[in-house]
Length: 183
Image (cartoon, rainbow, N blue to C red):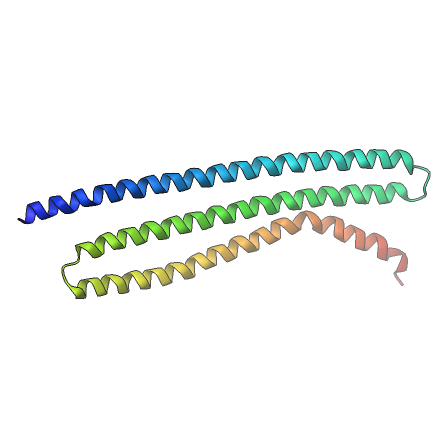
């Protein structure tokens, strides 16, 4: 009877495993498709905007060449716009990395929950189930602390990388515009 019971349990989990695998594949495909579409849209929009800004600078340069100091202002504006493009690109890629991390964390959490559920079905006593649940809760807490550290580190890295392109033009602007007023 024991062999028959084990065969029934093995057969019962096969459809569950198949459904889990199919769900996982669907989620991965959906995430990849959404990510690819977002990247393509961002790159196209970024390129179009950059071209329009460059054309505007060229048109403005021809129109305002006779204005004193225009070339300095135009050069600064072009540098600032390029820095904004670099910063937005870094921000987009950083958010993309964070989304990938969240997806991976969620996927690992679901897989761990499924694994624990399967183990619960194999428990023979209430004590075994309570011990399993306690271990799962403890492991979940430890993982949440570690994962929050990872997300925090990645967010800090994103902020640094997104601000880096802006630091140079900002510093140059402060120096240029405060220099005439220095005592």
